[in-house]
Length: 170
Image (tube, rainbow, N blue to C red; front, side):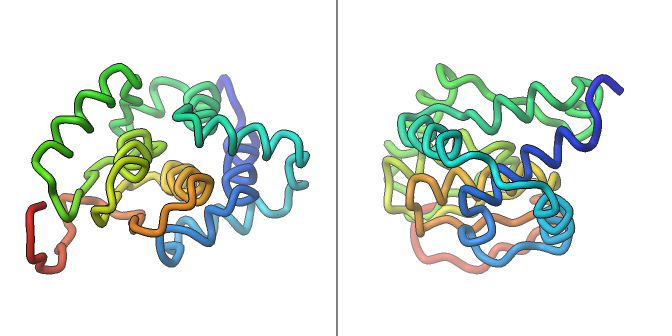
């Protein structure tokens, strides 16, 4: 492998240090296991955390970029991970928000690019799914960094999910 599992733990540790465990609802078992392993590492420097939060608030995805860098393409393919570039996320979000939905479901949130963009622009409730616990921790960290309280993050397969009934547009 080009990168070690330790590199992914560093990303997870950074996500935890940004508040991943406090945002998006309770952690799922795989997220808890990853967080516990990551918390054995030292906390990232305060300056790095402040810089990452500022970047996330400005619309960047520093943890997602790091995740892409540390995970081999063959592993990302196995998870079905395609990290959508910002110039594609923006028109997708605009299109969705033009319909004025009250709930938005991100079926494969990855590092949260779509989810965070929606959360920055809408008060709609958000449900973000991903089967990769590292991706969901990164999404949670992004949501914590922007102070979002309207999103639920589920480390689960969307295709197996039973969404609760919803009054309004989804």
